[in-house]
Each structure stands twice: as C-alpha cells, then as structure tokens.
Image (tube, rainbow, N blue to C red):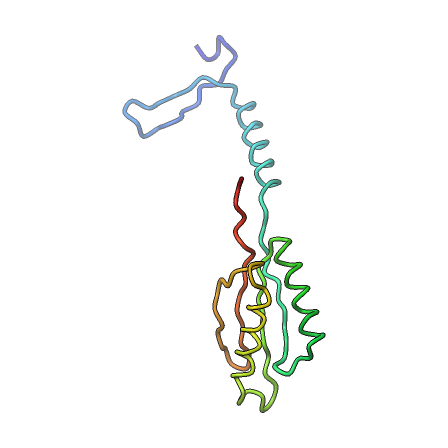
Length: 137
C-alpha cells in the first residue's frame, strides 16, 4: 500500500501489541523536524554567568561602576556572581565583605533577586544574583 502511494512505511511504536506503523514521506518528515529544532534553538536564550569582583576596601566610585555593570548584565538576562576577594590580613575582617555584599544587594533592589545567598569559600566570599522573573502579559 505504501509503495503504491509513493510513501514510506514507518514503524511508530514497535513495542505496542500489534506494532503501530504509519504511511508518510519520511524525508519530508525529517526535514520538518530539523526545521522545528533549528527554530527552537534560535529562540532560546542562554543565560550566562557573569562575574563582578571587588575587594573589601573599595571606593564609592568603583562600587558604583561595578553596580552599573551588574545592572546592565541583569537587563541582558544574565546571572551575575558578585565576589569579594580578601588579600593578606583582610581575611580577619570578613564582616566588611558581608556588609559590602549586603549593600550591593540593597542597591540592586528589584532589578535582580538573590539566587544563592552570601557564601564564604577560602579567601573569597560571593553570592549569585539572577535577573527578575518577567511576567508574560
């Protein structure tokens, strides 16, 4: 029947009892599947993880510069890892790093949400901020 209509006989579900087959133009089917997957890949947004590094004794202008860059990254839909690196004896004052990250979080406000709270690892301390969830209207 498939040969008389110039179609292919494609086994759809081999484990069913009896096995299910379908008459179709298999080349056309594969082409349409590849087109669908191509369009899906074009439309997907990959969220990258950007990183902003600071030291605990950062000047106000430098802090604002890092903040502006972070807001730009969040607007583009990227996640941001905000880190504080302690050098030498600064490690004794981890409270300065916590204060700095909390200030950064307060400045971000509603432009981003904390995905991973402040964590300390070795000589550094970091948190991850994700862009806010967009409502579909």
